[in-house]
Length: 84
Image 1 (cartoon, rainbow, N blue to C red):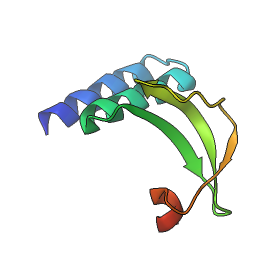
Image 2 (cartoon, rainbow, N blue to C red; image 1 turned 120 degrees about the vertical axis):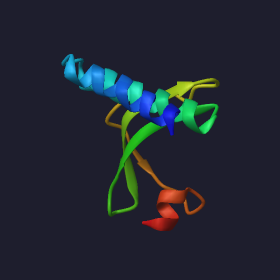
Image 3 (cartoon, helix red, strand yellow; image 1 turned 90 degrees about the vertical axis):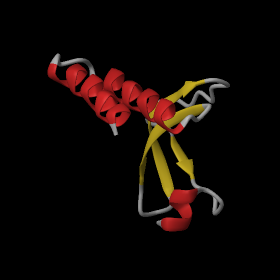
């Protein structure tokens, strides 16, 4: 729990400083990547029509760089597509 709280404090500090939202989203993705021990992470906004809009590209190793604002069709094997 301490690790998660420290991550939350780091992101909250960026928000309090008025950092550009794109940088905040990248920081959130990086914190999630570290907490989960993942190779990479990104943030998307999932739409009801089965697509996702890229909010921030990948952070971490072996990056998959998708431009911010790009709409991506979700495949059936991706968790949000299954849940949504």
